[in-house]
Amino acid sequence: MQLPLTFDPVSNGEYLPRPKSERDARAEAIARSLAEEGARRSGRRDFLRTSCAMAACLAGINAASPVPAYALPTDATLDPAAADAALGGDEFIFDIQTHHVMPGQPWEKSNPAMKTFLKFLPGKTDFSRYAYVKEMFLDSDTTCAVLSAVPATAEGQPLSDKEAAGTREIVDSLGKSPRLQVHALVTPNLGEVKASLDGMEKVAKEFKIAAWKVYTLFGPKGEGYWLDDEKVGLPMIEKAREIGIKLICTHKGIPLFGTKGDHHLPTEIGRVAKKYPDVKFIVYHSGFDPDVKEGPYDPDKAGRGVNALLKAVEEAGLKPGSNVYAELGSTWWLLMKKPEQATHVIGKLLKHVGEQNVVWGSDSIWYGTPQPQIQAFRAFEMSKELCEKHGYPELTKERKAKIFGLNAAAAYGVDPKIARPAIEKDGVEKLKQSYLPKREPSYHVYGPRTRREFFALLASRGGMPA
Image (cartoon, rainbow, N blue to C red; front, side, top):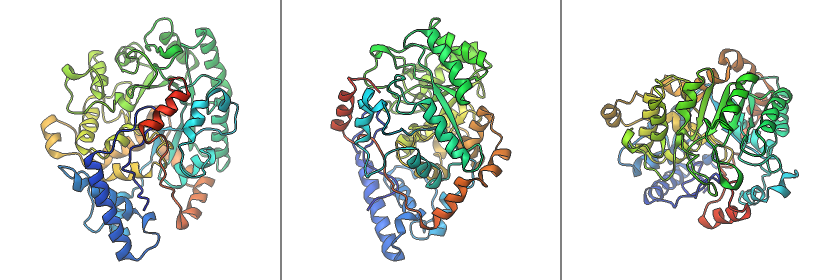
């Protein structure tokens, strides 16, 4: 029985898949029992396609956790209408961290690592733009998305700027709606800085990009850089300002194997944000580190994890609602089965970064369709005890709507009142409406699931992240 939410270890290729905990095993056993009971009592062969199956997964997490975190009606695992009421919604969902690759391209020879990564994919999917459209827009409630880059050299990039723009054009051709935007990867520490800056200008003119994506922990021989490095980082920011695309998305948190130093830490984020108040800095993963157990913010315990981002912002004197944004890709995926830590992370981001500055990302399609993540966040309730103790704002429906998409829309200059009517009439939506009555979600997640698979992937790329 393939549940919509996996309890097995899985990684997006950036971190070691964590062993299944006793709590996860217990939650999975409960979820399977509830799903089997629901299928038997309903007599529905398509039970696993209904929201009752996801309700069973969340009920399993509730039962295995010290404090229930997901608000579910008692009959949600049996009655699709009850489950839909708890897990459904009509939010404007803007997912700003999504990925796909282009198989059969020259990068497969220059980047055998990514080709090895794709071997871990279950089924026969090619992980192409067509699989991407199905997972993102047909099998989930995602409204808009940003197609983002992965850390790689230009020769080894599994999704070039041209191909990313091509995906956007195909989606646009189905209805001329602003459903998809694209990033351009900037690697100012690879080769001559001037060549990187010239490349920024060229790609901005040619492909109509929405923002820049940088990996400060990626570089020659695993050496990264800081955004406030006078030779590398600052010239890149200055060039972004000159071009007029003043939105920089940077991976901070989740250390990559094969990299050296602490460039995955958000140490300099506050400094550059203060220096350039007209530039928006979106911190991918919010500084989250899978090896750090998240708790309340403590500036004396802020060497790694989300606290490191909060301290960097605090030390720069930036108040909530500044030009620093915290993104939840992979972070929410890794925390949704850990309600206490999830409460701390969401709570302290709302409190210290600001309710206008927490933005949605799923890191899909590495984790398959983002729909389970969306449904879980809709039903998620932060611990009232922890909120009262640490002064966290309540996670209201209105704040969830901001996180789901309204905050990112403002950062990207998208007006939901204009974008949504166009999206609801485009060809992708027409495809979705014809698909939904007989939908066939795969419930696949992608990526290495064991230490052996992960290190086989790492060895194939010479110890580099990509």
